[in-house]
Structure formats: structure tokens, C-alpha cells
Image (cartoon, rainbow, N blue to C red; front, side, top):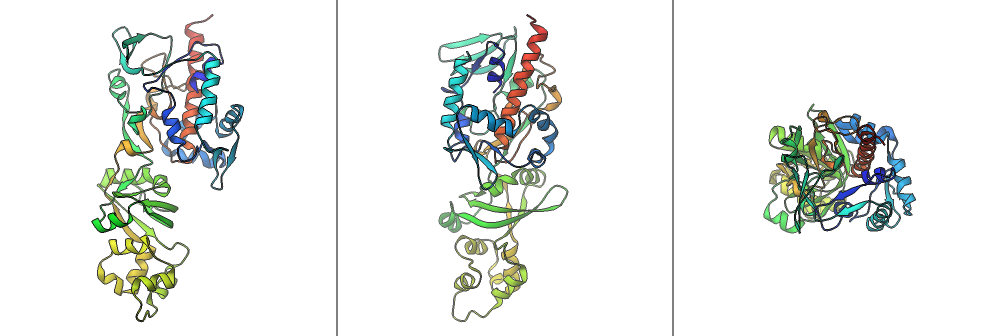
Length: 396
């Protein structure tokens, strides 16, 4: 996006990418359906960026969700709004969008250099790269770093750029997993029989750092190690911060959010005759499969003989999360270059002429199109910032 912004001003732009082809993480983001942005009102949209919403808001003033959809349309790709408000290309794929975009950039004169892995600066402030043909260095008039976070390192964003900026005195917050799964520590039986099984139509209750209780409904997935999925990703920042502070966090699962507690206890307490408890729960509450197995995984045996205990557990089953999954497994990462060391154009105040954009900045957002929207917006801001900088330092 920065390259496109600058090429529109006839600036000579060179893009250096560590990977054999560009846009690999962009393609991965579209693997399950290219969720390009979200159609919710701007006032709600900006809240998705949490403590960084002020910084992201200033970027979205230059390029917001509506602008992003228009930009996609101008590439010849139609979009639609899903039932959840998420915006997708009609074909649901990232590859056609990326192909059209790269074609337009190359036609605009943007030069691409792949398999160029950035190694920092040398004593003369040249950018240094490792390439298949050996070391390469260059000294452009301005630089935009868009080096990604630390998740999915095999796609290029390995976080190894941090020391290069720290050596220059830039404040960088440690990279942490965002939109990630969590470890629970299942029994061998539960892990063997239920890993990969979705937990549908549930509500998670959890507390934030101020001990305020929140609720979020949706679906999550049981994994071999614990839990993940859209419901967990949406609250992962709060859960991660709690684990960092206390070593663990406890969430509560409402397995039947459409029924109130009194109704659940009443149904559990009904005589079941010769039926097994599993048959009884399925007959009276349509509770079966992984949900019943989860009750047996968490509760002591005596709880199943007490309708009140069992009913309360069905409505608020405690689940202890012990750790986040590793950073490299996360969809995205938190942490990165501190906004305190950036001006409004995303230029590093300690390195004039060097700009930063994308996931390497210290912000995070849930899935739903918010990540891509802010990344695109930051590229537009950095591109415009470079153009302003060049006009000041290299006037025609």
C-alpha cells in the first residue's frame, strides 16, 4: 500500500521481500476466506483496537474500511458483506486480489526484489540484505519498514528485526501472541476423543484486569492442547494479559446460553429412571457429545449426583487456561515499535527518513477484517509521510 501510494506520485519505489514471492502472509490470511474488512459503524469499528484506538483512528482518517472496499473494487474484485458484518471478496480468495494488485504495481513502475532478507544497517547507514547472490546494500532517500510481527515465521514475519531497531535506540515492545489459542491440559482420554471438535453455541464469561466480568458468545474449538477458535481469539488479549499477570486465567463456559439456570436445574433434577445420565441430559436438555464429555473432564464425580451442582456447572463450567500457545502459532502478534518513537507520519523520530508500517507497530486487533484494515491504513500513512518527507529533503 505504501508502494502504491508513492508510485502514484511518480516516486521510484523498490520493494525488498525476504520470501521467494511477495504477499505470502496476505495469502495465508485468505486461506479460510479473505476477510478484507468489516462493515460495522466506524464508532464501533475503532473500539476493536483497544488501547491503541486513538493511534489507529488517525490512520483510518486517511484510509478507512469504506476506502478499502472501494480500493478492492477498483482492482476489479467485487465484495459482499456476510451475515456477521465481515466483508469478503465475492470469490472468497486472496490470490485474485493479490495478482491484480501486483500487476497494477508493476505497471506503475514499482520494482520487486525477492529473497532479500534485511540485515539492518552498516556504519554508512546503508540497508544491508542477505540474498542468494551474496550480500547486497543500498541507500535510498527514504525507507519504509513493513517487517511484520512474529507469528507464522515461515511466511517471513519472524520478528528478527527487533535487535536492529533496538541497536538504533528505538523503543520496541516484546512481541506476544495475539488471536491465539490457549493450553488447558486435557486428560489423555479427552484429548484423544475430542481434539478437533467444535464447541458450538456457547457463551464464555471472563473477567478483565479490573475484575469486571464480560460475556462473549460464539463457537470455539477443542484442540489437543486446549482451546482456540473465533470466540477465543476475540477475547485472547484479555486472557493473555491475565495469564501474564497471574500465571493462569479461569473462564466459565455456559453450555446452554439459551436456557436460564432454574430451567436447567429443574430438567436435571427430573427422575431419569433406568436411563443413564448421558441419555437423561440429551433427552431433557439436548446436551450431548463434547459438552457432556467436558463436564466429565472438569467436574468431580459427586457433582453428577447433585442437580444443583450439575446445573450450575452447565451454566458456568470453570476452565483453567494455563498458557498461550506459542507466538509462531498465533494469527497475529502484539507488541512492536512503540508509537512514542513515531511521529504522525509513522516516521521514527530518532531515524529521520525511516518509517514503519503494518503489524510491526505496537498494536493489536481481533480477527474480523480489523487487522488487514489497519495494516493497509498504516501503509497509506507511511507512503504519504515519505512523500511529504521527500518534498522537504529533495525539492525539485
